Amino acid sequence: MWSRILAAPGEFGCAAVIVAEDNESFVGFGSCGRQRDDALMANGFSGEFSAIYMLRSYHGRGVGRSIMSIISSELSATGHTAASLWVLRENAPARAFYEKLGGIIVGEKIDERPDAGLVEDAYGWLDLSSLGSI
Image (cartoon, rainbow, N blue to C red; front, side, top):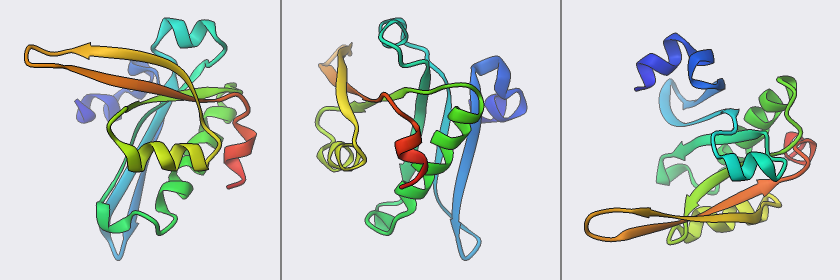
């Protein structure tokens, strides 16, 4: 999937993919692009943080803040003023991180699986400029 996205990012609505490294080792990444959720788009969130991941050993070191700052700047550069992301409700560390960055819950969905439903919350930022300076 990522090979296809990186080869033709525009076809997938991808504005940027950022990779974080430490001593030439991969420690995390983030990606962003146009909003894929119609309800969030209708509520003014034209941009989306589509992926943000990092090694657990790098949590709390500022890597996530840097990734969010860079990809929010990329979204702003492509004309977006507001953006959102989806996170599993059970992911308390990620939720705390997004709340610390000023994200507010703006939506909810249940991803139905054969064995259970996964509840996801959407966090949104109405002003991306607040993330560009973190």
